Length: 200
Image 1 (tube, rainbow, N blue to C red):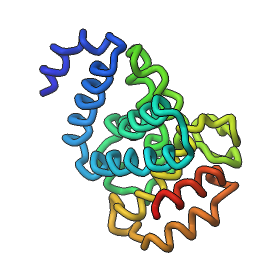
Image 2 (image 1 turned 30 degrees about the vertical axis):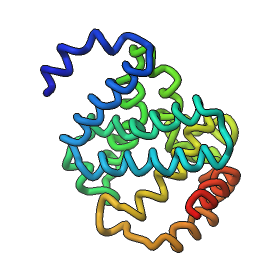
Image 3 (image 1 turned 120 degrees about the vertical axis):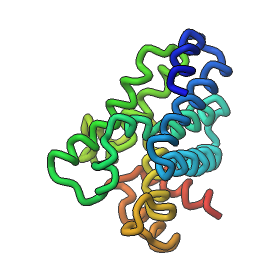
Image 4 (image 1 turned 180 degrees about the horizontal axis):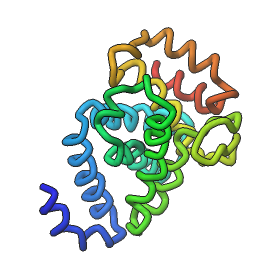
């Protein structure tokens, strides 16, 4: 399959919707081979993020950008060794540094693909915090792109509801309570509010 991706690479440099769909499909296939749980997590995050964006009444084209970026938000995990992923969240300082780099690594994978340019900030900054204590750039508040703020909330929720390790399991009620507790610090209060409303 990797050879197939290489052979089809010229198609990636067009900017239409079909090209973006092809890119997402190819990268998600690689992610599924790497780690099926992260692959499934990416789909779930996209579902939550789209519902939140719709609840916030964002334009249709922006919702589509958020959907695409959500699907690819963890694509940088392709560069993280399986041994590190398997140890989450119990990582050494050095392993955590490798893990945190997945935001930049995922962005770098897309930087020469014209149809992905608008997705890059959402992918790069989805681990920033509303209070400026996140990574990789310690952006704060509205300096974090809205798409990234939405993905951050969806990502946090799904990590507990559909966890990659059994150590992270929480109920829906517990996770919603934690989101509310972190509203205004880790997460944008407006996004948290819209996310919870979208859960129904």
